[in-house]
Length: 82
Image 1 (tube, rainbow, N blue to C red):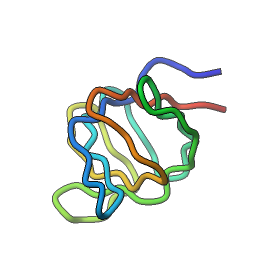
Image 2: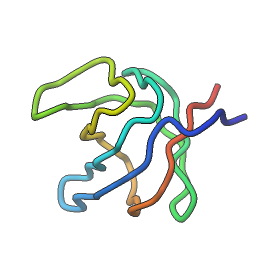
Image 3: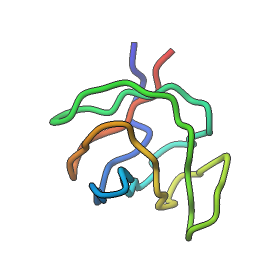
Image 4: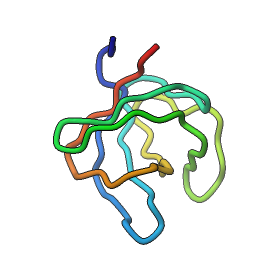
């Protein structure tokens, strides 16, 4: 079951498969997430960056680059799942 949203997609770079996400609640590398509203899939967070630097934790208010396995759209929400 999904929790409250962890973040919201603000941009998507299709050639490199990276979503820009505004973080609403802490996200960690290794978290299992569901990305969905218009897009819908599940994945494990394997790579996050802030200002082109790899990070393992992203806190509320940060904008991150998140490697995604499928296409996402602006406005899609990210939920942590078990």
